[in-house]
Length: 313
Image (cartoon, one colour):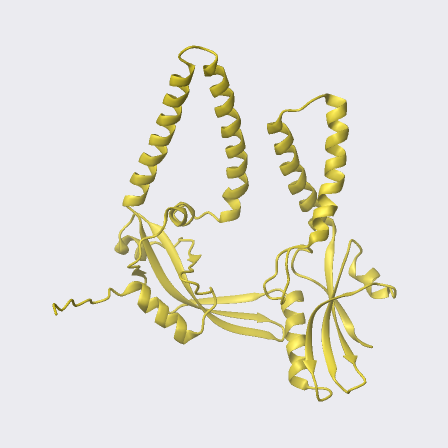
């Protein structure tokens, strides 16, 4: 096995979902890394402090998992290298290998007994193939060189003919990302369930308890429905088309994206605003990154009213 002389530190956190690596999934070893010490700590604290309620236990597990995961991503780093592997049948593999460690790059370069893990390979059946090697080098640069992105708007802003769904309105209208509300939502859900059942048990203790409990539940449901109806009625989705050029060493890429913004304002007001945080738009299985031809096609489909003619036979 022949090693490439260069080892670089990844620009990304060591544990993250990466859809640019074929077959890459969430790392199962992180489950054991996080949950084992967490559960041991929870058991020790439970025995020391006394019985906990289900709410406190659930919040402790969630907060502890997030904290351990964040600490691990702070103190550990991922490193990449390229190796060329030859077989007896003259086939050649250009392989990207990865290693996670808390040591600095200088220490990693000096170490000889590191167990590198293959994460991506490029196969050449007829000996050394420059094009396959270039693919490996582009992948290597994509993971280890800071991305220089230039975005150019290549279309006017248009109103979508499709009405946005409630969840999309909640996220895009407030410029929130799904990750920013999932965890607070889970915690609020746990608190809501806990308070609701505690209140239900309290009211059940009196003769009018069931009536009061279901009256409170009915008011909550009606309030949620009223908010949803009022919120859904007034929002519009606006779309635009952008060209994105990425440069990371030998990795160069030009792609096209449809971006979306949801607002109650009219189209004229949206065109005047300069500080809008546009979101990538997905619909009907169309991925974020598109060719120029496909991007223009879908943009036209989503923003142009279709003429329908009914003919009586």
